[in-house]
Image (tube, rainbow, N blue to C red; front, side):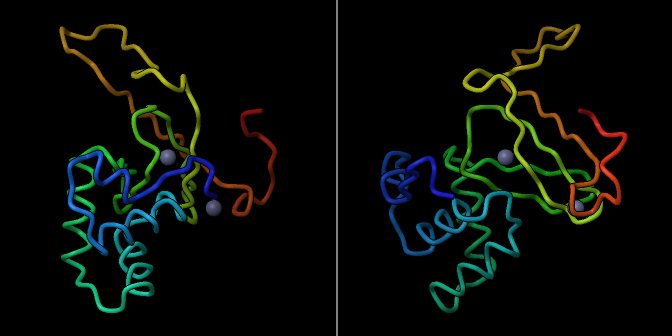
Length: 147
Ligand SMILES: [Zn+2]
Ligand SMILES: [Zn+2]
């Protein structure tokens, strides 16, 4: 899963954040398990560091999102998910049944990759699309899907 050479310590320093064990652990966890929600991140961080308060993990997540190290996505009806793949404005497929989230590349490297028919004067920097459906594991038959 380590395809993007994400180095938490270097990323934290580059973002002007102090390098702390909880911050490194949170980033490591999200690199290894993209689209984890805060509960899953907290559980995995505890496996590494022992006792870490839920609040501490939330604080780290918020600081990292604010610094642009993490992207927060929030599929409707689902807990917020976090990922280290920021800035490319990719989109997501979400399984209605099991909640699996999968990345969908759009126009990688430029954002937004969708243009509204009328921007109403907004300076738009992001377009977020969530495709809902059933993942292969949850779909009784693959027929009828988009090819
Ligand atoms: Zn599924
Ligand atoms: Zn993603």
